[in-house]
Image 1 (cartoon, one colour):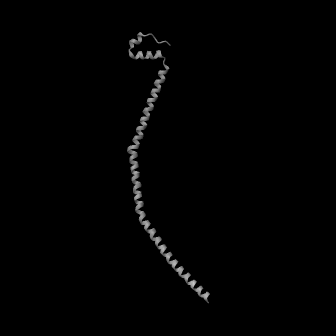
Image 2 (cartoon, rainbow, N blue to C red; image 1 turned 60 degrees about the vertical axis):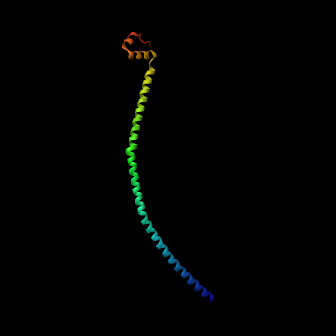
Image 3 (cartoon, rainbow, N blue to C red; image 1 turned 45 degrees about the horizontal axis):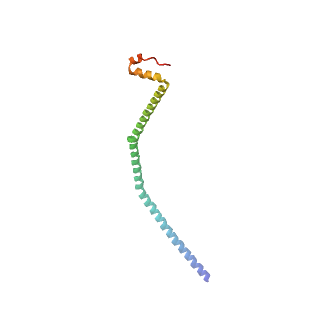
Length: 126
């Protein structure tokens, strides 16, 4: 008889525990639902502000690119072209001057000074 009474009390306690656990589960589900609802409500403004910030950054980057970077690249390219042209001209002048003999250089220098002096000087030796 005692074991039957203990068994009945244990069954009643397990049933109460199941009822309490089901009640707590319902409360937990309700709290999770409220949390999801709150997060959705709070995230919409954050997402909207983030999209506005991305748009602003994109516009700023385009402005800097068109008003500063593009002209800088263009000027840099032109300057590089000018420098390279000067280098080529200098190398051509050096190579053409290097092919002349010293007498020929003197003759050419005399030709540019005055035509009369060039006529009076003897022809360069080959």
